[in-house]
Image 1 (tube, rainbow, N blue to C red):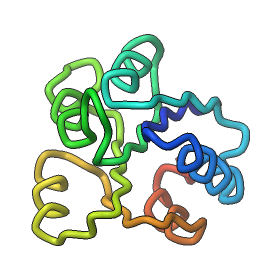
Image 2 (cartoon, helix red, strand yellow; image 1 turned 120 degrees about the vertical axis):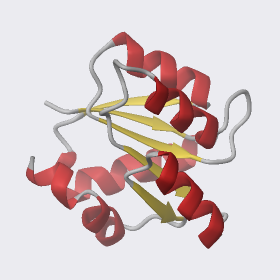
Image 3 (cartoon, rainbow, N blue to C red; image 1 turned 180 degrees about the vertical axis):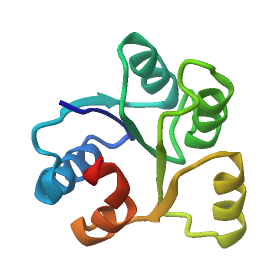
Image 4 (cartoon, rainbow, N blue to C red; image 1 turned 120 degrees about the horizontal axis):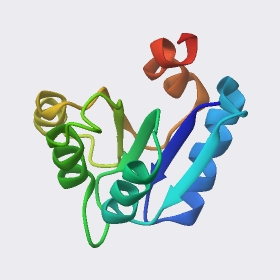
Length: 124
């Protein structure tokens, strides 16, 4: 069973992302919800985590800072991180991919978009 951490300060957004993941075939996964990057980082460190989906704009710790922490951690650096944002800024997207994001997806998320972004992950 895969363990997926979802970080978004909106409970509605987290619920919607989980629904999309269920639709694309990851319904058997353990979903761990976090309201900010700090909670997500703690959750990812607690138990082996297969995937991290994070919003960019969150209180306490934002998605970009979370991504930097994950990629700087020997224990977490190989975990795929997908950024979900409403910013939709190509320059920011390039910066996030350079830091180590697997994909940057624009909101609103839809199952086909997640399916495409996570194709390698789903087949794994």
